[in-house]
Every structure is written in structure tokens, then in C-alpha cells.
Image (cartoon, rainbow, N blue to C red):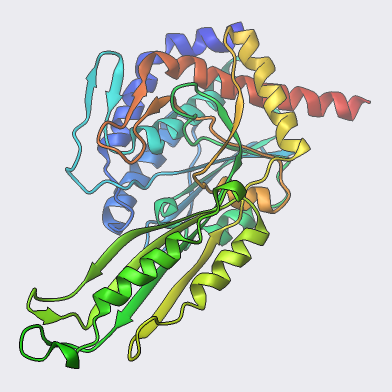
Length: 383
């Protein structure tokens, strides 16, 4: 571990420069051209640091998907991460101050991708690579991975383990051993317009219906089961003096079990109008399955904790409410450990940042975990 950490310390400025370069390649999920330009930068960094080219999976509506492979034989370890962000072009500046690097997607999760590249580089340079490493880098995670979830499953299937380089939990740098499953739904509400002063009785208000549906939907929350339902978007009407004939809702759901996923899906997909004459159209689904804690994920955590201890710090494992692409690999029964990327705070917030001083130790943690996994596999083969 000392060799790995020393190597990364010697290259700390280059690692930070690569992070800045990738963050400056802004990549809002819905802008395919921008995301593909960012993918080109990621390919350039991968080629420069590891000498490997991408296997590109072209996409029509989203950014192209990128797979990088290193090593020809042995158990496969999949490193999983995305390079799209929630930020529009030019919305956030890149700036470095008080030991923090701020910028669009720097924490979620471009720093993690760069750290993963350098973790593998450090391992190759100091210990040599045993086994096979596959990077799966997708372009649509912030949208729920509509085009990449199947691709991830296809290329991760058969892996000995999946390590997700999403950021650690804010504040304590914990790794993530369980995540909630997520769902997204849209509800279109159609009423009947009328003049609000002359003949309001002839109208059927889509906004009134929307208000009642919001109350019902928030009533589905069951915190004791870990289930949350949030109406994050509510729009309706056209003019202040018109009885609204249309409205729409955007709904986010989070669940810890498949049973809750089914309950919530049934409740939302079968919404019925409260007002006579209203039409409801519901679309959406529970898109990500829950990532549940397993003995295999706890074993990966224990390995990471041993590595962290050797590096002079401690890490915990936590269950979190947000979903990631690790949910898909965990659902396949593959041991999955998440949160192995950068430390910082402000995911999806204007103060998004990483802690620069943690770049080397967290990169060393990932490199050491890869080494620990390899040694365990070798010991098992000898036994």
C-alpha cells in the first residue's frame, strides 16, 4: 500500500488536472452533442493514462456508451460510473478555493471516474495487474439510465464484483452498501376550460384536481418502511382568469424492497380522478430495483476497511436513499460496493465540490481494494 500511495502522491497534480479537464467538458444529460464531447475527453484521458481505447456503443438520443477493458483473463472486476451531469452548459463555474474544487459534476461523479483510472494506473505501475478490469461508463444515469441499464447488465454479468465510483457519503466519507430503488412517473391531467368570471361553473379545473392528487400521492409515504413519494414538479393552467383545463405532475419514488416497489407502482399507475369529467394519463415505472445489503457486499466492505486501515483512516458502510447504476448490478446477484469515488458535498446543488486533500487517499483506497480482491482470488485458487 505504501508503494501505491507514494506513486499517487507523486502524480497528485496530474490527477487533479485530469479531473479539471473532465469537469470542463460539460455534459448535461439531455444534450447528446455535449455528452459525446465529454466522452471524447474521457477516452483521451483513458488512452493517455492506461493506453486503452473504448468500445463505443452509439446512441441516437443520448450520449454514446463507453466500455474500456484491461487484462485478458481471470475474474472480471467491473468499475462503474457515469459522465453525464444535471447541470446545463455554463450554469456553474469551475473554481478552486480553500482546498475544495467546485464545478458541474465534479463530485457526481467526474472525479470518481478519474480516480478510478489513476487507481488502476497505480496498481499496474506498482504491483502489476492480475485479472480483468472493465470500466463501464454511461451517459444517462441522471435520467434513470433509460438506454444504458440493459447495456450495463449485459457487460457486468459474470463479474466477480462491481465497484461503483459514485461519491462517498457527505460528511463522513462512508461507502454505500445499500441504496433505495427509484421510480419516476408523470401524470397528465385534462379538465375543461371556462371563463373564471362569467361562467366558472362550466369549467372543470385541472389545477384543483392536481391539488387533490398531490395530497393523495404524499399520503403514500411510509417512512417506517423506507418509502418516499415526492411530487417534485407541479404545473397547471394557462391564464389567471381561465379555469385550468390542463395540469401535470412529476413524481419521484424511493423504496427499500420489491414489495414496496410493487405497492407504489400499483397505487400510482391506477390513479383515478377526484372530480367528475377529469381525465388522468399516467406514465412511468419503478426504474431502478433496490440495492440491498448482502453478505457479499459486506465482505467487500470489510476488504475496503482493511485497506483504509492500512492507509491510516477508517471507512464505514451505510445505506442511502439515492439510487445508482449499482442497483442494477446488485439486482443481478453480483457483489456490489458503492461510494468509492470522491469525497465532498453538494450533489445536485450549487455548492457541489470535492475535497482535494482526499483525492490521493481515496484513489489509493480503490487501488488497494483491487489489489486485495486479486490476492484473495489467488489464495482461493491455491487452496
